[in-house]
Length: 363
Ligand SMILES: [Zn+2]
Image (cartoon, rainbow, N blue to C red):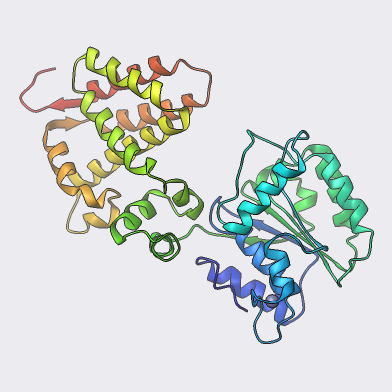
């Protein structure tokens, strides 16, 4: 099998490759694992391999079957994803195009969409029709976002799948799926990727320089999808702002309000969440640095800013890490709720200030 386009996941590649070689492809797979580790990408490659007309290696990526699957134009191949009822065909096409362009970066234009009954009803109708070219392959991603009605309807297909049909369900939240669905699928477990795998992929596929690739790979916590989200220039900007946020927490309330105003005028919640995540990572690095031995570089994310980190931790007599982690984590969670953003940031700054004991200064 030729699953070279997929980052890591050797164990899964072996399992799927053997299934094709031995012609024992089950009617329903359930790809389960964290987001951004390549479940969708591998599901598409697997479909390609099943349709590929090249005898030498599958998928060959050059035969017409491979090409039609890549561009979601194969008549017997379907990729179902959550979308609101109001989504137009053009909007849905945009999502598929994003996957054709990069199967690790599906465009997600809607807030919390679901897979509705209409989609599965349509699938049930289609699944009764004979495929035009031998087999029908259907990928349902974010299967946990099916409505209850949709899930029950899908169960009907899973109970008696037509011989020519292969379903691949994808989820990152296995425990929210109906047990009756899970039990009818062969589960394939995906693990997170290693920092090295992500780093190399960023260098090869995104032409990143080595150091930036290393930092981003360490920030992505095993998810290539998450690594890609850090890729635009906003990464450097968010990083600079996170350091600014730390600097200002040692300054006067006046300075703090200025920065908060600036953040709120220029950036949305998503960026502010990134900034707080980076603040969290900075403190985690500080803790490793203080407890560190010669292996320190292995654990630190901000490997390119060791000098700044050194200066930072040496400013303080003591840092109350436990309190800091708890407060930052709490603020990140509150960001998703309907809270007053400026107040939230101000309170967080105050907590940080109280947790950092500057050398030679009594608090
Ligand atoms: Zn091919």
